Length: 423
Image 1: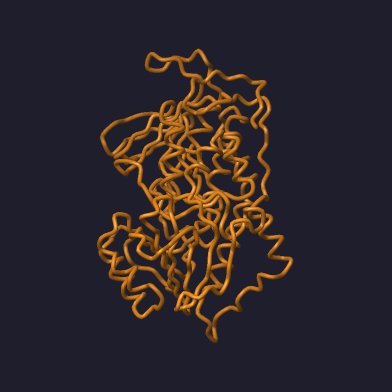
Image 2: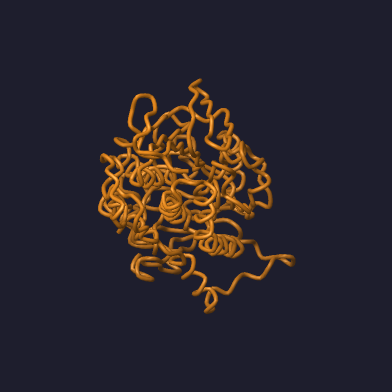
């Protein structure tokens, strides 16, 4: 669908479609950046009352670094990075068993050169877009009805609006996905593990190196963050099923204490801070697998569409690359949702599948050995090197020549110039 630049809506000139994005973590603001640059009028709704700080460290590798550079945010993102030098696996006494340096694999290894706390990256993206994008914090989509020409939205706060397109970028437990595509159980695939993390005082002498201790089916990690007085702790444990409500924090803490009981190394000292931490998180390690990421004028992005799980280390890269491609393909299709969403899925699908395979393999490698367990993958073969290559760089970022691009931050005024190229 094309939108005439002279169209008048509520007394204002509209240069492109009205797009509603659900979710203000990483995928949502990244998409808002590119939609705004392509000429859309963008609203982002986020159920949390404000940006959520902290969170686990996330990485950008390969083509995701190029996506950041094309946004003009390379310097801002690197300035907010954790500055981690690498990772050590250790025994119960703290003796180093293995070393992974940030320089490994050209900065695209286990510890990536661009490594940043989820909340810090969300802040960079929000600050880049807030002046040119409408953000609605403390609200959510309560009702959605679409027809051939648009999508009618009723917000939980009572506001009613009509949009041309709606995109769900609201995470693993996407409310929009459940509303439009079906219940979570249809799409969530539990990988047999649970992940928890929370910040603690840095009383462990932690410097620029991540430390990981593993016992059969369980592991504890400590990692540095920019605030040297604090550290981020993480726990993994095997769990064949997961029946704790992801919103019930008290029950989650009980579960974590139960499953970490008797784990060696620094585990008791880390757990001692469990009730004092401001940013506790626990959830299943899961992937989202869907046949289609769109339905009519509603599409999905990031974990809501194709979570690869923390076991892949690539969720943020998928979100950043997907945001670039989704906005570009919609604009290239003159905002026709059927054509634009289909082109986005075609470009992204194999990239997503490679990263989801990495996640599944890493989950299997952490399973407890047993008579019925699948063999641990051999990560030394050429097949795995090829798979990693596809997971890091296995997608093209088109220049989208002829597609409008403001050529500036998403917060800047839009003056579409069809001859301008991205990058």
